[in-house]
Length: 199
Image 1 (cartoon, rainbow, N blue to C red):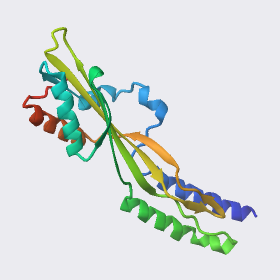
Image 2 (cartoon, one colour; image 1 turned 120 degrees about the vertical axis):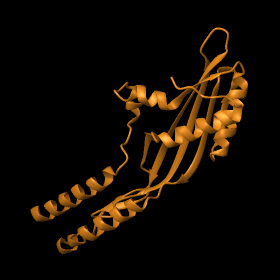
Image 3 (tube, rainbow, N blue to C red; image 1 turned 90 degrees about the vertical axis):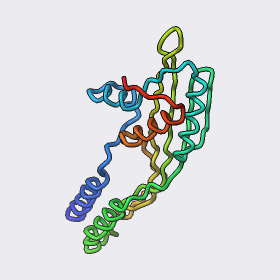
Image 4 (tube, rainbow, N blue to C red; image 1 turned 30 degrees about the vertical axis):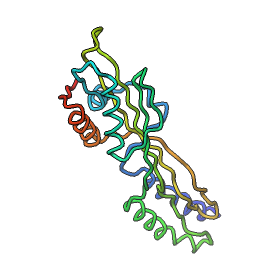
C-alpha cells in the first residue's frame, strides 16, 4: 500500500508541474494590490488624448473593441465606462502534449492496479475588456483612456487514479501582452484622428 501511495504522489507531483504552465496566474485578491510592476502595467494600459469630445472617444473605443472581435456588453457614457467580451477556445498544443506525457508516464500505475493520470486542459476562455475615460483638467480638453484586458479560463475534465476531476474549474488572470494594448491604442488613435500620449 505504501508503494502505491508513493507512485500516486509522484504522479500528482508530475501533474502539478505541468499544471503550472508558462502563464503566471493572477489570483483575484492580487488584482487590487500594488506591486513593483504596477506603474509599468498602468502605463501600458493608459493613454492621453487632447480632445474635448469624451463621447467621441467612447464611441471610437467601442468601434475598436468590436473591430478586435469583442461585443459590447455594458456602456455608461455619462461616467465614461465600457465593458466588452469575446469567447474563444483556450486549447494550447503545449497542454495537450503535457497531458499526453503525464498519461504516458503515469501508465506505470497500471502495475499497482491504478488507472493512469489524465490532467485537465484549458478548453474555453472569455476575454473581457474594461475601458474608462476621464477628463484630466477642469476645461475638459485632455482625456485619459484606460483599458484593461483580462480572461476567465475553464478547464476540461481529467482523472487522478480512480478520482475523476470534473470539468468547469476556472481561473481569472490579467492579460499583460503589450502588443494587444499597442494594437488597441494604435487603432483608437487612427479612429479619432488624434495622437495618443503615454503617461
